[in-house]
Length: 122
Image (tube, rainbow, N blue to C red; front, side, top):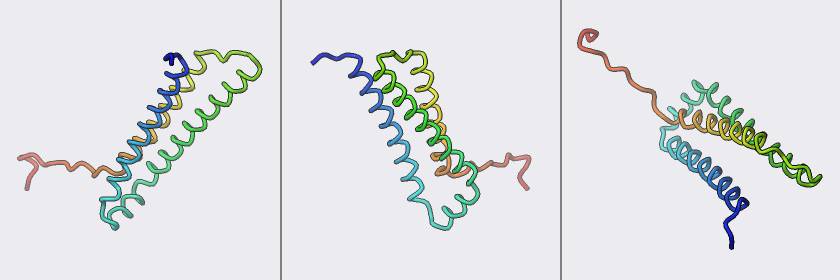
C-alpha cells in the first residue's frame, strides 16, 4: 500500500472532522455541567452569539459541500479543478467552522470577573 495524495486527503478530512467533533463535545460537556437556571439565562443573554455560531458552521459546511460537489463535477467532465480554488475554499470552510465552534465554546465559559484594585475598593 503506497501512501499517496488520496491517503493524505482522506487523513486531512478525518482530522478536520475530528477537531470539530472534539471541540463540539467539549462545549457540550461544559454546558451539561452548568445549572439549568443559569443555562437558560445564559442562552437568552447570548442568543446573538449562538445564532452567529450556527450560521458560521452552516456556511462552512455549505462551502465544503460545494467544494466536494465541484470536484466531483470537474472529475466527471475530465476538467481539473485548480488547486488554488480548492485551497481557498477549504481554508474558508475551516475558518467558518472554527469561528462557529469558537462561538459555541465561548457560550460554555463563565464570564470573567473584574477584580477591584485597592484604590477602587470601598
